[in-house]
Length: 110
Length: 112
Image (cartoon, rainbow over all chains, first blue to last red; front, side, top):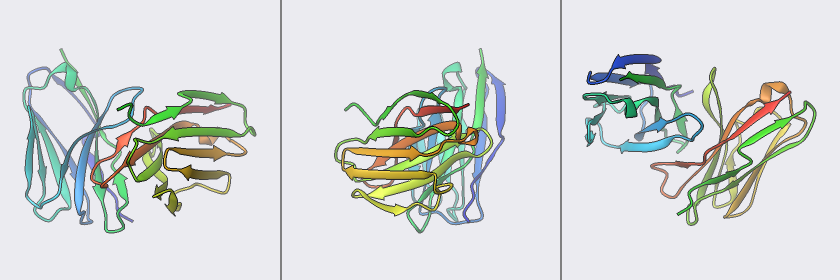
């Protein structure tokens, strides 16, 4: 069974600080996605990474896919209150099913 | 584009009653997924359809759960009879190429 472990589970930091959250697995994924979910809503896709070592940037968010395609990280520069939410990583396995990690709940204090 | 539409947004029902959740995927998407989200277990895949055909229902908890997709624009998830442990937020998602899902806003189900 493929599992995705996300760390930390909870993170509360001050506005303006930098942070990194992690998504790790012992399995190889053909692609990996990051989503952000706000209370009362469904997850919203932020980015998909496909190639080992790939780095994608979305404004102040930087996503990296591990060389072996087993792990990923999300780095946020100069966090803002609007970044608050649940960040989910999701990996696509060989059977084309996408499994989700349990998420990192991020709270940015103004 | 109205996105993935789920109904109802909230459902409160008594144990033993039948519950039906509905989903309208994005037009043109050929795969549809039902997920359940709880604090303890996170997002769990229940079942998914490709071109209206159920492909994998191994995540469906037990026989009380059933899902149908009679056409490309509609799917239902039914729980009969419902139990308190079924309380969760149920999401429907659709995709075309499988590299990213579009989720609905979910149905918050409470079984008392």
